[in-house]
Image (cartoon, rainbow, N blue to C red; front, side, top):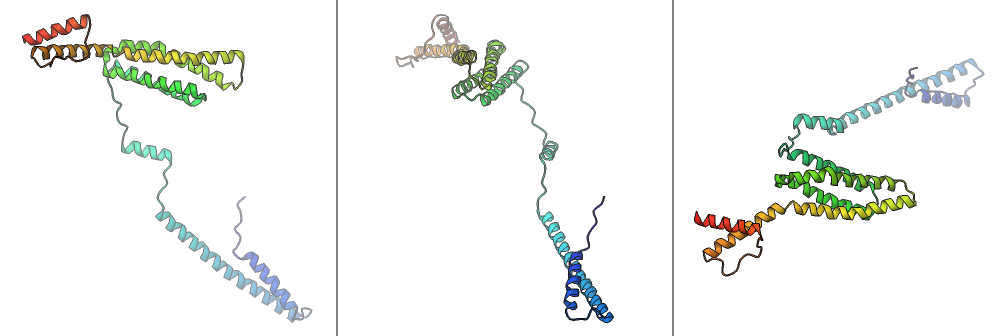
Length: 267
């Protein structure tokens, strides 16, 4: 049912009628007809006058309020909701295309990012500071291993083995730790399993670092070969000063370096 709009000053008019009637009743003989009519007319006149003045004041106040609201709306900036802002940004500037490193490298980077995101979630969920520190170290080494696929694509087979077994197994055990930790109770089996996983994380960190170090074996061999070739060239040109560089290859790397030096000298 619609609400009725009360006339401005309606209540005030009634009060003014009553007050005027009471005041005049103190001075006029209301028991006479002329006194009764005079008091009633005067009370009605005061009620009408009060209502008219109240209505004008209310209309003026409403007008001023409306004008102030219109002025504030003109000055205030438009508030844009989050969804509207995203739509506007998408329409103005489309998202930058994702950088691609090739069909063999892209899946490794994506899988590594998913693993890092999951370990980041576990880092936030697990409250033990010791375990959190180990998760942080695992994330740091994992990121370096996956990024090595960009620097040296020949390491991709080793990185795939790391991503297919060692990394998902570690994450699986971390999820088990998180579930047991969330129980909020102590028990022989729970405590034993959580302690075993915590100790396993130390071995995982060592294995991850060893995996990262093995990825640089080819680069280390190349560096040793280049240094040996440089030493050989400097010695033959009389520029070595009687001292070679510190790093020297052994075995096959030395023979390969010597052969490379002879070939370059012959040319």
